[in-house]
Image (cartoon, rainbow, N blue to C red):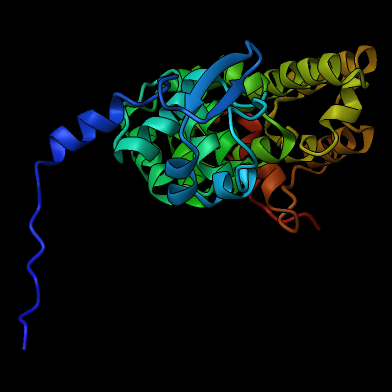
Length: 291
C-alpha cells in the first residue's frame, strides 16, 4: 500500500509578496470596482475574492462572456479602507493605520470577514485615544460590538472632560450617547455634562433639521438635575425657556428634591452622584428617601 504523501511548506513571505504584487494591478485583473465618494478605480481578480469572501462571491456571481465586465460601484466604503480589505484577502495580512482603522473595521463587519474584524478590534484597543474613542463607540453601537463598546465607555469614563469636547462626541447617535449619560463613573460634573448635552443636541438639530428638544428627548432624562445647586438650576430653567432642551416636569422633579430636602430613592439615578460630581451643600440630603 502506498504511504500517505507529506505536505511540505514553501516560503510564506515570497508567496505573500507575489500575491501583493497583484493588488490593484490592472494586469490579469478581471473585475474593476469604483470605490468611495472619490470614485477611485480598483482592480482585482474574481476567483481570489470569491474563494476568500462569501460577500464577494455573491456580489460578483459567475462571469458572463469574455472581456472585462462593467465596473462594480461601492460608493459607501472609502478607497483606502477597501484597499486594506483587498490586501487582507490577497495576503492574509494588512497594514492598519489609526486614521482609517474604523473604516476598515466597518468594511470587515459588512463583508463578514471575522478574522479581519478581530485584527481591527485589537488594533483599535491599542491605539485608542481621546480623539477617536467616540467614533469607535459609534461603530461599536452600530454593529453590536459589545466588547469594544465596553472598552470605549471605560475610556471615556476615565477621560470624560476631554472626550466631551471632541467632534466625535457631537456626532454620536442617541443610542451611543445613552450608555455614557447612564454611567456613574464619568469624571465630569453634572453642570458640564448638561452643557455638553446641549451642544450635542444643537448639532443634531442642525443636521436633522429638527427642534433641539426633539433631538434631545431620547437621552435628556439621564441628566441628573437634582445634583445642581439652586442657583445653577434657576439659570438652567431660564436658559431652557429661551432654548427648550429639558422637559419642564424633569426640572420640577429636581426642584422638588430641593424643596423637600430629600433625594428620590425610588428613581435613584436622578440623584446619584457620578465620580466627577463636584460637592455641593445640598448633596448631604439627596441620599435620604422622599416621603
